[in-house]
Image (cartoon, rainbow, N blue to C red; front, side, top):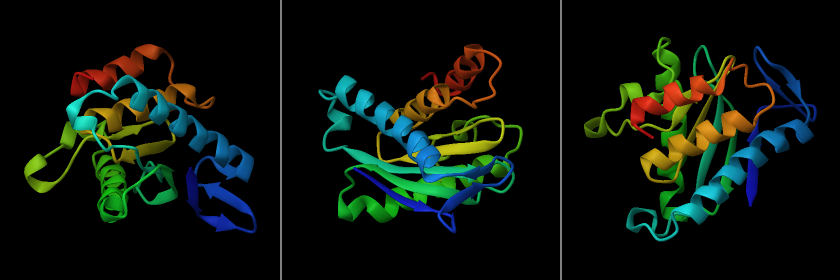
Length: 168
């Protein structure tokens, strides 16, 4: 299940510094995140810390200021966790934007202040997720980046370098 909360403008969604996206393109981006979520849920189904984890909130944010450009619920989110996950996915993106030399929110994580990993920087945007164990949030965002056609990474080595920050 995917619910969209896009920045609407007459049936189109505009991502700053990326250009307008029609709903089909938005669907493709969110579908990549949903695909990675489903793969992670299959892979870690027996893990204790993944128990009852079935989805979360996916955020595409502006790379300069971290303002959400698109937020989508991906998978099932328990009502009692929805506010927390929605808040965390935005906070991760905003924090990564504020730390312009960082490529992952893992680099500025602070569990004592509820600041977690789970956002990664692409060339022109930030992708963030909250709803899984922390390493899972980050891993599905890295996977989503790798599936997006316009990821602008020169090599898969850049994805490996980002993953190294969390030993993911």
